[in-house]
Image (cartoon, rainbow, N blue to C red):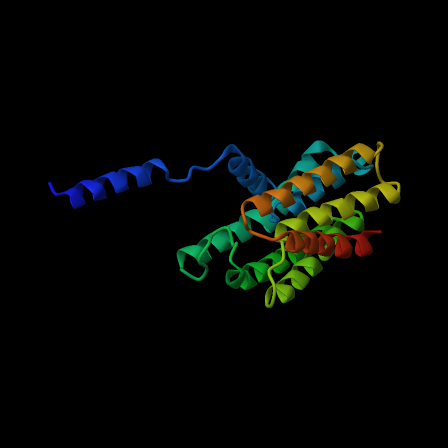
Length: 225
């Protein structure tokens, strides 16, 4: 064995040993990004609306579960399945839709799912703020899709910003059955953690996360206040 061959073997061994490993911070950031994906934001909003307002006192648990599952299917399971199919067909390069060029069609799917959810909630005579929450989310998605043509904006931020706006609206309109200060603080804290996770994973810049959060907050707030 020549000296050059020995060097190549040593170099390959060292390369494997120093291969970067995901730190626990990266793992937590990934978990938070998945747990608070924008596809789940509507479901979280419905859970809050159905269980932490006067609706919880008026509607049986079975009804609240059915409505929650319907929204989960419309705004998460169906869009997620469509995105998975797009990835399988090679129409998008990343199932997480982290590439700016891949986001237009998933945004369109998201917008349609929000409209369908708003129609569903209106048809079952849900309080006005619930379908308006969905319409606000749809408008935020339209704004994100248009902005995304030129500049990448955070969809995670939009989802969390919408949740903050919903909680503010419920609280300020007196729909809550308890002091929403604690819930508001928790969601704001989670928004910060999710935004930080997107920075750690290098999916967005601070400006993109902030813009996304303000975008989601603005549309939901003006439609539900």
